[in-house]
Image (tube, rainbow, N blue to C red; front, side):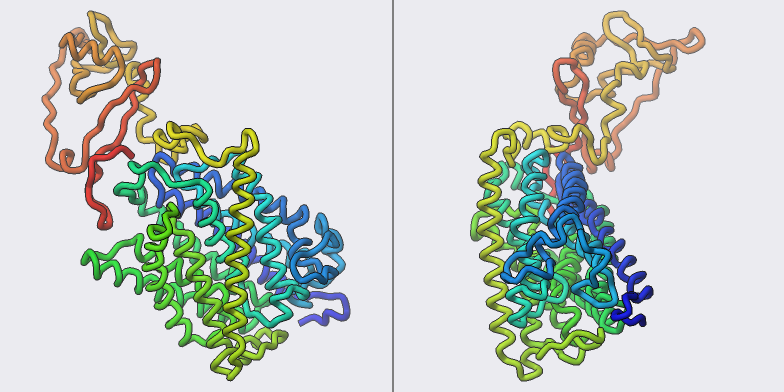
Length: 532
């Protein structure tokens, strides 16, 4: 290891933190996959876009003044930093606050990933009724400045009031988890509830994306928690193993609770419990012993499962359960530090010294942790709600989409693309070479005699298709001068069971728009005839 007094840094530690930074940024697409899978198909891509935009906003804001407001070493007020490192000035000449063996520039780069992940988690509050541009992006920039940076300063700045007081927050139970969970709850409160129709039989549209996003997050979390030791040391290994134990136990606990109710295991349940365990490990994984992580994972899975009911009690439509998953689990992890934090384990990085928790006869630690939790929750909710209300009143920056936009979906209203466009080929079906009514002939050259009534079942559809169906006139398309009668097609029982396709007009041009209906039973949700 290099001697920091000689102006040299540890290249091994630098390489490790660079790798962990890449893993942390990899959590942003993980959240995008998770959110898009949990939402309805008609609003899935807007959440991916929100995560992508907030990642860009977070990178710039952190460079601009975010790092300085959170970690400036010359600020002494204990609540927020100054502009000593504005635009990452002095980042190449100063050792980092996290470790004397890392440069400030690398430390700032690593911490920028935390800021971007926190903003991306917060964007789950937009689900199915929030506008992304421009209000949400303006909110993200100001929220990082006024909420995330002060919370990070409290816990991680050498002059922060919580750090000086001895509060233990290893990797972000306050700034990241309480900030995003309570902030998401406040943002959802300002947005208001979705339409009642959207609340009925709500279920994920793509459980595969939910699973993919969860496992990407799990991988990224190893860099999130492991890198918070700020070096390739034994404490980083401890944090990674603790994170895995919490994730595994959280997923199992949630699944067992789901089985108790429905006698079935669900992939969404396992993913929810896994994330709850990882969140709980965030503030505690560098402080507590391995056996305590098993207890922490089980407790967080159970507690967060029941916490999903809180939104119904308080009447806030937290669509993706940000409060239950992130705030509740983060609080549990912080309180576990007050009970089980070990001075010997914290010292494994070679620089950290703490008095420990209850198991080390340091009984004042738990009240300190509780006071820190209350301060983070109250500050985050108040400032987030006030900020959202003010931005919502700025002309052109309304945070909520209109009722019509909510009905057709955020993707069609704001993005113009769809996460899975199953119907694109059907929008130009008149150019396929199908027969046309009233003695005409199609532009294409498809063989056989095609009956539009079989292709376009049910009510609705393009004007030409309805006229053809009403007149029962279908013109054959010839191949080699001979007409070919098509074989009658019968709907199989599987097709009947899996659903049907209804055609609906898509504007004055009369282009058909296919909507999937009746998708069967998935993960314990009852099958209903509904528009996705």
